[in-house]
Length: 142
Image: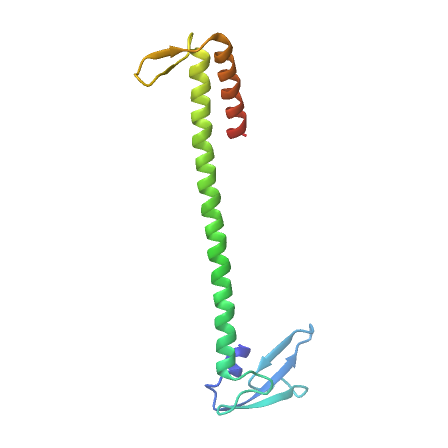
């Protein structure tokens, strides 16, 4: 309401500050009672006393809006990055669990050489691969 009273669209008006019985303050364009006092007379051609020129207010408002937009964009970007990281971590966790499950179920573990032939791992290397698979599950599935 105060913004409407102080706007430049009003040609000329008095603004009154009224204090209610509960101590609350109201700003009105007409006196509320005999105790009300006029704060200032507003002329539509001039800015209210103590107010910044319209261009300065617009610049300040625009800077505030830009800052709020930038902050909102940064929060959104951070949220998207965190979501992508959680999804990537979940994929790696699933892969690590599947790999461990397959390693534990397999009687013998092998890899393929350059010609495509199976090369079976000795038992000690198989145990080392199992340990690495368990560590991968711990790392990615926290």
